[in-house]
Length: 556
Image 1 (cartoon, one colour):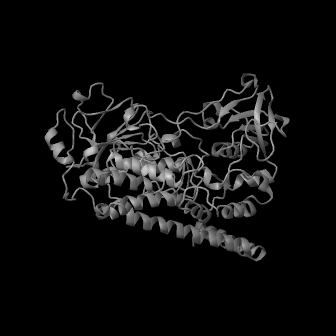
Image 2: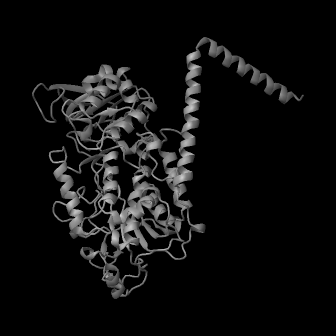
Image 3: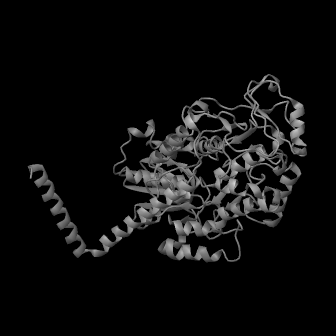
């Protein structure tokens, strides 16, 4: 036996001896490790089953010989890349327009410490993703986005550094009121002269745009570093010494919680968080999160006090005073986090319900309010000075504009989020706005609905008989508003994943002629380059002039 082999055997034997001693001393820890290992294997197995059953086949060499149509995708973030990949897999050509110099969207502009709030099994933005853990961080998420981008042949179809300034109807468009749909040009002054015409537009600009900076009184007088929560990995932060520092975070949303985690990981001594109003914090537990998202009504109901009671008693526990007293869990997007409440218990974080009155050289002045008060209330408020070496503004992001779309797509009372199935413009179903219209939700971001909505669009392109007309799309919005009248934030201002599922089911059930597309829309089965269309085919428009008579025939 060689010396190396002998050394390896000794090390291995010593490791086993230590493991045995550890098991005898604290057997519960070893059992917990085994349980974690079993869960990890089960988790990976589930992913492989999903990939085998639902991942659409990428086009060979990224080429489509006879595409069914051509679609413009605006925004090459997570939703845009996933939508475009689904289109390519089902034989529709695409062009991705991205204003920045890279793909990834908001994930390309957040801190490396940012990660999923939901368990990644609920964040399968495409069936082909493979997560290494339950809560991957930014770099792994970006890695999966870019891997799919390359795998589905989207590199050559992406136009980086191309901001979309206008989307206009092409003269060949047919009337949506008669079952047709508009054709579109992108970034053209005169649609008549367009070299490139699209059969549909998917808008995937998301709901988070430029960082929202609030100019608090006295902000310029602060002597320490001032950062937006999105800048904790940027050039402004790289030379900051965090060790032993007191950090003041202004803001109470998910970005504030992530800012606290980032600061503590950088060895900050203490963090204070100034929140204007309480938001629900739910655990990072796939069972709990799934159960909450399975509420089918998308609003507070008479029995909603039951899950809220359980959250207060078993998640907040001794910190129940921090839970909202005047807002239900089904009235806004909750924060999904386990560590934040524990950090408060350990005294590493101070949660302060307050309004910022002034920023001073080495502190911030707050008007601290009692539970149940509203921002700006003075009754019961007390003035408090919080020392700070570093100031983080977790004040969120502005909502991206969609002004490049024609204004008549969104008549009064049918603007975002009041759209057909909350994602289709009520004036023309060929404009899809996946993840760009919603305001608040539970258990939805990045899940299977990206593919489902994309395939609904593809179905409507393939089958003129399945298309809704504007009157019917508006009626859907009106009916939902009637059913959810009185809901906080409006009928479509908040929804759950189960409610979204109900909407998609009714899309089929109310129109039995769509049932033959059921498995394609829900599972992605049955449509590829070899698919034979029985209905009037979509004309791939990639030339200046189009035979208008053929479009009229399609509408009929």
